[in-house]
Length: 147
Image 1 (cartoon, rainbow, N blue to C red):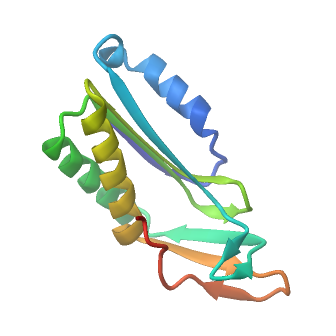
Image 2: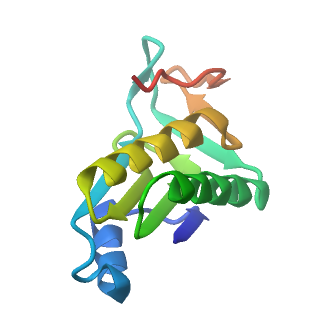
């Protein structure tokens, strides 16, 4: 399992490929990989958004993500989990989050990946401050529904 919160840009498909190559336990055992990539939108709540600053509570955020992943591992038959999340300044189309789950079978990989993402989106200590075109800013008070 790998969990990382970082300010550096994220290339999700490169990250998944590198991680798979580095994890010899996945070679031949993983019949399924479910991957979710979340990117920044240029609109929210009907308004254009030109940039966003994503903040987190260092230490607490990583512990929460680890707790989510461990719970998923206890609930589904998983071989491995990868969670990478950006913080700092982001722009429309920038990847924000990558969640990947590997399993012998697709059902466990799909369900675990979705569970991790939904919990992360709803409960992890991240805060979003959007920049609007006219120069104003606003804090995002609620997350979009996942379903």
